[in-house]
Image 1 (cartoon, each protein chain N blue to C red):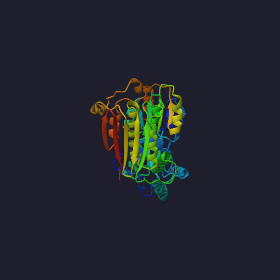
Image 2 (image 1 turned 45 degrees about the horizontal axis):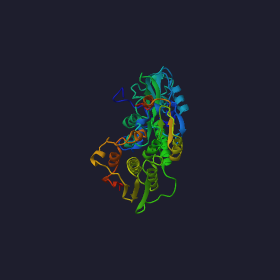
Image 3 (image 1 turned 30 degrees about the vertical axis):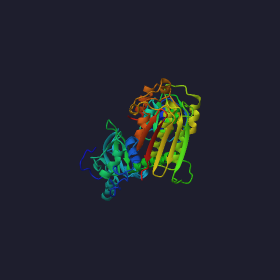
Image 4 (image 1 turned 120 degrees about the vertical axis):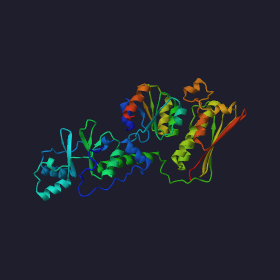
Length: 319
Length: 112
């Protein structure tokens, strides 16, 4: 918000460079940070202030001591203006260093509110090219000051944490493997074997991670594998889960030995289930298995007869 | 908000602190007792809030790359659930709060 459409420049020695975080071009992870963080998380608080009656000499002393280039003029939390290095330079030239701050401060000040997202604050540095913005709370009391340095430091800290998180998720630091022309893995799945349920999918996920596929693709493939595995455990007489991996696609196939799906159209409807209460008590049998597999795959097929069911899901790798 | 901070807010026991527990930032939450519904949620690294105390919760968390699992209602856990959490590196928390209240507190903490 601004109290003046043409605020006076209360920035010293020319405008600071814009922040390197344009809201429309930054990576999503950065935008996410800029919207998640509030200005109050990042601002310098409490701000160093002077009062209206303080001489410019004191303002200069405080700026030097705290290595800042501008100070809000405030009394009991109320903001009256801002005094900048420019004002001090003019006072030095003009010889009025002992005048009270109020005669020389900028009165129309662009301010931010503490519960605005940081993205908003960052955009102000581009929009107004000032070095700092006083921050007010909901009751219009001065609670802090936001400098471009505060923004950069906060973004850097958050990004480093993000990197640490990404690194922690990477497989062990073995040299990167390239996807061989074709890899196939096969797992036996036994009926009602809840003890081992999910192991095949876990192995498939790990193999795909080792081959450094895109994490989103791995996630989709793992979901399909898991639903296939659970379907066979819950409904079939047993079968096998096969994954064939090439650089271009991941093909998953669940093949069981019966008893078959009586009504395929019904089985593909979301929410249709034949699972019993015991299976539901394990968190499954909500009738989402086949629809989920279809949702995450690029190609899906299903054949079923009393002698067995084959579900095939193919996911294409983005070029 | 950090997962560790949120755990304190929920008076949760840390049954297993998984990979990067101290730095993990909670960005999305899915509250469900149906693992198929959890699999449907298309957000990276969710925190799973559930009253389902079963190994399959950890398996599901592993599959979707969850940040962690919060068991509500102070449920007793099957003996190998903790072992599985340790094997897969998934953070496992347990709060005495009922699910509704846990969700409200999470919502407040995350400014929903």
